[in-house]
Image (cartoon, rainbow, N blue to C red; front, side):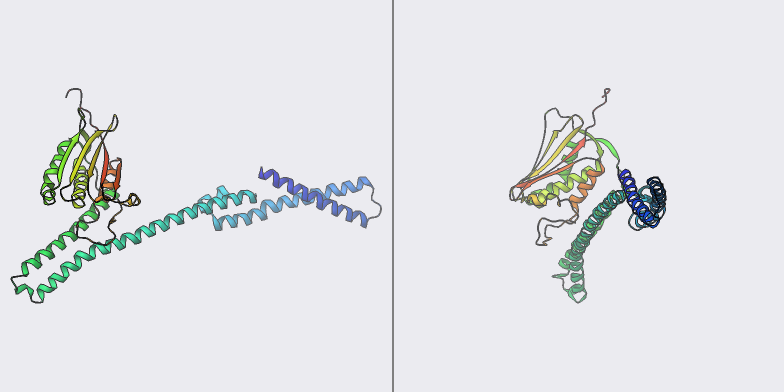
Length: 344
């Protein structure tokens, strides 16, 4: 449609200029009849229209190509060059919109990178400075003081253990993201795995008198197809969090339910401190903590939930979160069912 408009515009301009030139020639030559006038008019129109086409196709095309090369990617030049200013304007707007989206995404990534580096520095600084200060104190003479030397060494050792935990968790996330940590899917019973994790974390739960509760739907088949070691990591991280942020004399409850024909859902619920809905989107970010005070007394690497999210993404499964401040939290994730063979 734009090409037809351009052609009609060129014809209109050619006719207008031809009439002006024909009238001017007629005034110069006194003896011009109507037939001669139209001959002159047709000849002028033909010449002007021909020159207009040549100008449009060669000179203007070259200029538009230069504009395209300046603003559009090389791979798109052959597809974008046009003699229509309307089409070029649309293409430039599209290109500008894409560049704006890319720039916006770059700003988000830059903001995330800045936050990540800041959080990483903060997380590493605390155990590093703690261990350094105690070791320097020991070197300055406290090593000979039997009343404090073992205490200082134990504190420095705990700080180094935390630093080691951060490095290990970062390494795990990097491997999962890069695909180096491949999934070894196998059939296993998720109830048995939950009971094993409960047993492993029982000592920590008893320190706060937190009760473990496990429930499942009646007649639900609980065999799943997943990477057992990584799902154990998911359960461990979620249950550790429920203990860490749980209330004294509280509960950590896991319920296994049927979701659909191919999936089950595992719900990990506690009656701990909880958090507000505004943190839902950020809770799985690396080093993100709901507590903005910077207090690290609860320990951990700050990467637990991020690891959980990466593992579930690697399984192509979903993880959900619901929480209410002062009431508690629920994290739930899906797993693929492993139906028994007919021979079993």
